[in-house]
Length: 155
Image (cartoon, rainbow, N blue to C red; front, top):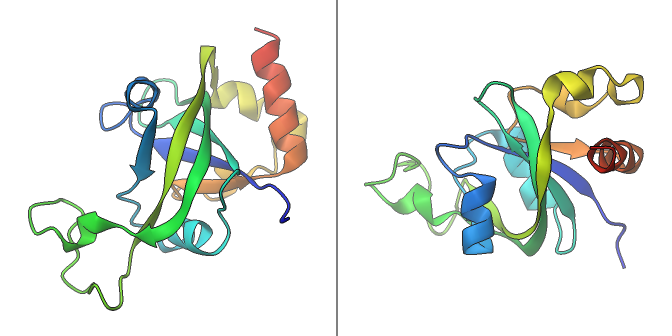
């Protein structure tokens, strides 16, 4: 069995929030249009991986919960829909450019963990979140994951 990976997945809360996922319980993590994040989903994310749900484009940006990958990479249907803002005329069903994974709700944090709280932790200073800020999905090392969980449990 492959080693479990950990991720941080960003969503703007007015687009899709932790409350939406809690209501839906499961959803495609679609609309990702960054090649690096796409490659993570396509090449590395696997069923059972855990992800922090991160609300971006809010004040303050924060980790708000946990979700789990429940279906591995498959073509993102939005790329083929001319009515979608994620439509990609250069993508084809025989050679899709964009993919997504499905995720399921695990937990909503009582108190979000803000980006500033994360940045204040010396052991988290090398997080991809801070180095690859434009990526909507970043890796989280196992020791970073565990440390962030202690921040949540301390609330």
